[in-house]
Amino acid sequence: MPILIVVNNPKNWAWHIPGVEVVSAKAYLTEPGYSELRNAKVFNLSRDYAYQTLGYYVSLLAEARGHKPMPSVNTIQDLKSWPLVRFVSEDLEQLIQKSLNPIQSNEFTLNIYFGRSMAQRHTSLSLNLFNAFPAPLLQARFLRKGKKWQLQSLRPIGAKEIPYEHREFMTEMAEQYFAGARRRTRKRTAVRYDMAILYDPTERISNPSNNRAINKFIKAGEAIGLRSEVITKDDYGRLAEFDALFIRQTTNVNHYTYRFARRAQAEGLVVVDDPESILKCTNKVYLAELLNRMKIPAPKTVILKKSKVEPSIGQLGFPCILKQPDSAFSQGVVKVDSEAEFMLESTRLLEKSDLIIAQEFLPTDFDWRVGVFDRQILYACKYYMAYRHWQVVHRGSSGKVREGSGKAVPLDEVPPYVLKTALKAANRIGSGLYGVDLKQIGNRCYVIEVNDNPSIDSGVEDTVLKDKLYRRIMQIFLDRIEKRKASLHHENGDH
Image (tube, rainbow, N blue to C red; front, side, top):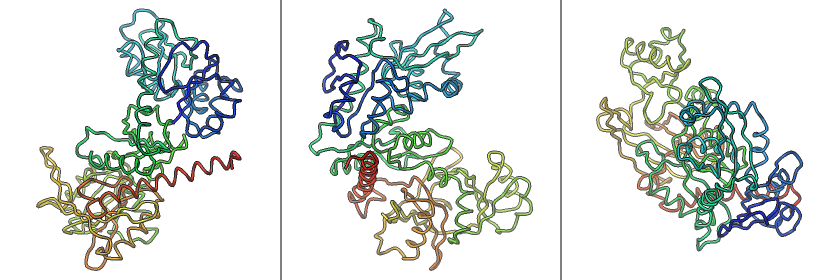
């Protein structure tokens, strides 16, 4: 994958970075060879990004060519929006005060090179500003007003503005930033596209995939020309470098996973989980209403609000289940056995949300989980209840977690009505990757929920299809990327 640094005058660029071509803005815009490159990464270090300047057109035409520019035109425009910059400044208020507190003067200028600053103390602040406004070279200016520091300006700078004493550090940061891209090109298989996998390797319980599964996703992608890199929450500013984002962390609307999904979608990436699926699947009030309207079988459900708790007592019988709208991994879900417990637990849950749901209790030895992607069924699993517990996951008062076993089942051994009901429920959400949980009682089944971030662990969900499961998922990503690229080329008249 070509990596270009675009500057106004290459003669003024004094640093050699292996594997990176330095080109003038004029050459990039006018020479046919650059317009014909495919999937190039373009780091725009022009000295001016004002509307209709060379710097502006470098990022604009890079996007039209299907290249990945940094900064993007969206970032250039965002940096001109003082209300947006001020909003980010307010969001980083505590970090700004902590980072700048020791400074004695009333004015401070912070230069940020590929998300890093020369002063170790300002590493976190620099990274957060870079993530909010991904540009290779940024300059933030702060003023102290009274006892507090305030961000006065944030702007991209050109290579010529780098102080002489900063140049060695900037070169080192640039080399580190590009090193990952160069390593990823050294693969035996011809790689066409880049995928980011958002994952937290340190999380042991709530991750939807274990480390072995992540490695299998990466290997499956490489086999078909899709290069994958694991990223973390600190890589928010790098999203524009990729063609797809695969979120393998538990999602929530009030969480950075949702911000990643929104940003990736805005940058034109193929995104799973997409923001709309996260919004819909993480709210059980929405799901209850949807299943009812679509006449999809589900346990009898009542939506509770603060003023109407008492009239709902007894409608479902006892025991029954109370759920927070955004509950996950058995947290925020309680079983109540009496009117007193119903009132106590519903009052507690309603302190966090104006609406919760109450659901009839359907005891079973296991839950079905049917995995669906791109409106196709991928796998089916039985998840057995934790020992002497009514849920698959049991969280003890001491914090100890016990889980029931899980077992993949060949699709031809799954009751057809389970598969049909699961597919119908998933398709009402969208065409993303979903895990539909169902309870089977006799020859009927009931949808418990649709998860936007289903578990795919090596040793559980993949025991029937094995490596084919990962290959099928990555192939769907590849097909979607190619469809999006073809659409972009068609729109630009590139036939």
